[in-house]
Image: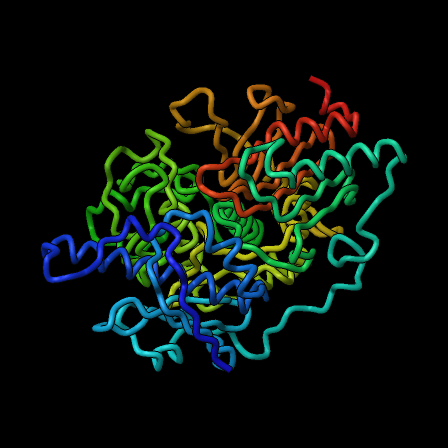
Length: 469
């Protein structure tokens, strides 16, 4: 079954029409913008449809709204039988194509590729399947996940959580999709927006960086790598390449010194343009001495993941599922790859709110889960330590290794650390209070949910030691 749709322009006024009167350079820039916009449409329609199982109306109202791409009349076709999406952007070019695979979600084909190339995108073995855990006890499953609170306290916490959805109290224009509050490892508050359930995965954006730190921690516990070792990047093995000295620790702390094209380093060519991790992240030259500066960079986490996968070899694609996700009960988390099979874990991971909580619980329990040590002892202390170069702005949170580190400057207890991602993705771990706060959203670029204040207020309602400032 195929569905053909026309995606109407969100900011069509920003697009220039390609016509004979437009200078060649401007026409080229416009075509490139349309290629990228079409790739954005293709990957979100694909992932939201076949990973998130969202309706087209829900996709239009969430992931295709409030973002920065100038979308003109792009014609998208959703092939539900083949599980692929095609978006036509120019009559002289093949459409942008995103194709779904079991467990690995959707991947872009390179620009200009024909649909036949979808068969060459890497897959996991067909006999690899997640365990059925829904009826198992929390946290591996969903049974007995909640814990009671005193009636008045429960009412106050539910009222607070409701305010997270009003689009005003904690950020004008914010769009919350889910909120969970955990106390002592159990859920004491949980709410979802219309159309979202506890089993609806959503793109994590940069929360995925915390998963990268977790996978590396698991490999350290297994004796496969050390964070002090130089990153294993094949493109840097030429004799005399100074990038060969960059360590995994420096990548996890975004202290690599590599050049980036602006703060956060724009990764449009990889995320939406059909490029690959090696030809984008691995190509960056040095700009500063490794370890000498902090620069928020997606490339550093792309490279950390690439290094891990290169080291693991044939086991690489299955490693996240076998060693971290499924042991934690995260059976609805989907890490996506580029078309050559490299994980894009700086951003492209799909995760439910409950799976976010499960990952946070691993850190709240210092790497122990169900009586088994998955991460090295005090790995939580490692990822929340702020050694190394830090952001220049003293008002910003400090950075650990894949996690933001919060304290009294954010109105939170010392020792708090968090996974954070664009468009309002948060999982805040407050060890002193044994509290975890998860908030997921579809915030527009001009809106920000105040997770610090919301977490502070939740601690106050719970009347924990960590909530008293």
